[in-house]
Image (cartoon, rainbow, N blue to C red; front, side, top):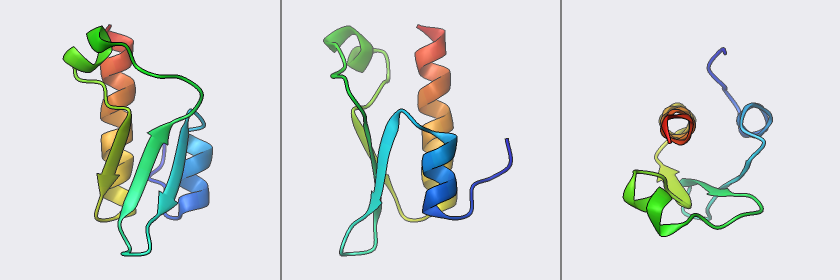
Length: 71
């Protein structure tokens, strides 16, 4: 996958997440449609993540997907 460069690209690349920019300019992503179990949280999954820029958020989203596959 190429590196997403705009929020729409990021949303398309990670459809299981709702992604937005806060009024302070920080990027956020939260999982769509389900709550994580305590087991999943204990094993590194996050319900919501944030980052300074699109590249950082994309990396965190890739890490979350990898952690989820590992479970």
